Amino acid sequence: MNVAFIPVRGGSKSIPLKNIKPMNGKPLVYWTVKAASECKYIDKVYIATDSDEIRKTVEEFKINLGELSKKIKVIGRSAESASDTASTESAMLEFADAYEFENIALIQATSPLLQAKYLDEGFEKLNENETDSVMSFVKQYRFNWAYDDTGNVKPTNYDFFHRPRRQEFGGYLVENGAFYITSREALLKSGNRVSGNIKAVEMNEDTYFEIDEPSDWFVIEALMKKNDISDVTARPEIKMFLTDCDGCLTDGGMYYSEKGDELKKFNTRDGMGFKMLKEKGIISGIVTSESVDLNIRRAEKLKLDELVSGCNDKLTAIEDLCKKYDIAIKNVCYVGDDINDLEAIKAVGYGCCPADAITEVQMISDYVAKTNGGSGVIREIIESIMPSK
Image 1 (cartoon, rainbow, N blue to C red):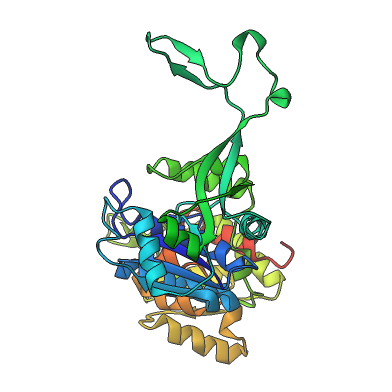
Image 2: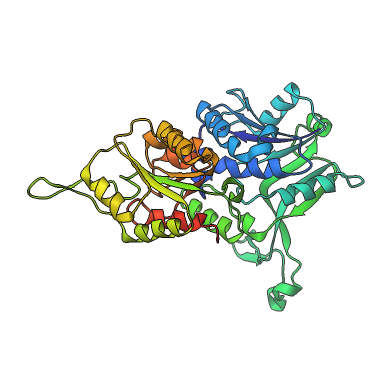
């Protein structure tokens, strides 16, 4: 049996709870779990953690992976193997002592650019003759220099009097830390993630970048979009579109006139979005805990099919609407931004949120918009679900 082993600690000094911080609309660890689950040679994916919060997050998001979720199992790890000074090998050896398997792929949760195709190639290379381990690399074409004994610098991999062109330069391999594959037998014998004869899997040059500081987040998200790494499997056919009001249709602000009248700022682009839904025959509505005339007037102006006001249990309200229109809840898109939206977002087929939703909502949403509440986020989400898209 081939297994994937993904160690994720709760402690991170550079970025607190880094492994479950939203990355491209999903918790960071989601992307490597997804890649490992999609690898045709991996039978089981183990996420080893010392954090209850990480365990809960994985259990919640794995539901979105459908049949692949059967491969995924969250297990514990000792405090010793999760300490700041512990090596990754200590966690691997702890795992190998407790579980039976033939081969293991160590996968770093901080490598969201990893894709199943690279893991497939890795296991295929492991099966080649006289191969004991496989690891991922990136080929680099840089001219390296180093200090000599006198304090001067000298090139280490080229002659600057005969500077080669890129196409003439063989380049060199850099370990990118995405994954390492070896057998259980070799791991226990060597005590190391790789040993013996090692083969290389060359990954996309973009995977050279690592996540160490908060600023790295923006770079990696941009590279994921460039490489078309997204969660496209999570969106079913949408037959009903529902949204919260404050924080979604509005910016969440509470404005008052000198006379004490309550004011709200809506966005006209959202109105065009609802018109697009109506043209496609998609039921639309607002489900909100508020009962104010402003919401009624806005719903009427938008010509929405439904307005559920004063709603303390949004999930029940959505289930009632599903019965009324004979629509399965998996065919519902719901947009929310706060704690009272969590259950609804989990239950519907396509849960979405604005870019400025609370972190808990972002982590369980199928789609985290680029736009803030009240700034046209509803239009953005509607365009993403249009049948023509």
